[in-house]
Image (cartoon, rainbow over all chains, first blue to last red; front, side, top):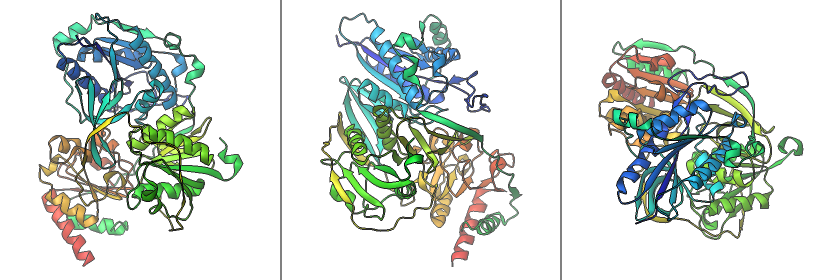
Length: 271
Length: 317
């Protein structure tokens, strides 16, 4: 019987990008409402596909999130999609976290979830961390590499393909004008792009089953961090709203539409 | 941060790869670095490969490793860390590409420093401007402690580099140490067009082209433009996924963005609304893209595009 496998998937509760996103008086993004980040569905799907491909192995998919209490909604969605359990790290000290602070919190959460996991088998579980390609609010895409650094393991980012073959991960990613196909031993962090798979929709049975799945909440002390260890290293000086684009000119093609565009481009000195 | 007080800063620029000539983004990055202080470069390329393209006025020193170190090898971070110590850099910059972001992100953890990605402006006072929430807001921030580590978006300055003497190349004692095996490397097809993220002109195709890219390609070639696409067009398989412009794809900020047959849903808008000039062609007068277009034509792209190409050729001729 091969060793159990623990796939820890990071998800984030983010303000819906289809709606207007607001800032609080402290110049922070208003996080009072949100959804499971769309980009987080791809690593979840990748985790579930790996689990489903390993029928002879004990595999657990844990969804973990760093965020306010409302982030439980993102975990709930992850459980409906098929994750086995959920963990949330919530602490007032994390408000306004930058990349550095976010990765410190996320790495500590991953470590705690990994260490606390209990498997039927007595063998030590192998483990793997999956994330989305970027968060839809922070958009930096830098957190996965920092988690790899903090956990002392490789981080393969921007995967367009991911699979587990004979206890090795095979990951394809775009790097410097080429697609590189890499083989890496576990543990590793992989960030999964939206090209890697087609995420499933939860069905009624999965939605009902999710209600029975365990969700745990931690604060910084529970994951072994002091507030001083999550102080942002980047200081925000100011936030400005982008000036609205002035209304342009829209004409209906009267048979000279193409010529009119070129005239406009010439006037703007673009051709 | 030390930059404002010490006058001239030491700026270290990471070029994870160096080809025969610098990319547009790399040339811009070096231009920005020179405005901030004394520039040295660190690269995973071999000493021979790096010296030629980096014979540029203002590049004092180039640090390389012992042998070629390619991303995502963590040895690139060891090399960076060693080069920071050697150069005494207080500003460390890279291009806004995943490989550079990864290396600088790991460096930031090692140096207990902040990281600012996708910068669109860097000032000598140490402040960094960037656009956030898909262009909805602009923030100004700075390193609260430690060095300033940032990745810089392309298309923000005119690259102004003068050729110069060959730089001093120092090999630092760092060897490649990939924690992975490369099974295969397949070059992405080269289109002969500029890279999408760096292009000054982008022609983007959407659902309206209905699978036929001929006219869009013709217009792009006439303008020396890169080709982008909406998610609908990439999902349909008409254009490769890497050309997807939008929140989950490439964010572009060209001088001119020509939107062809794209309705302009918010996700797509997010990827291009910081373009200087937006021109839209769509047969639906209610398409949201017209709300942000500087110039829009409601019409059939099969009529409008050929006429544009013809007119552009006539003006050139």
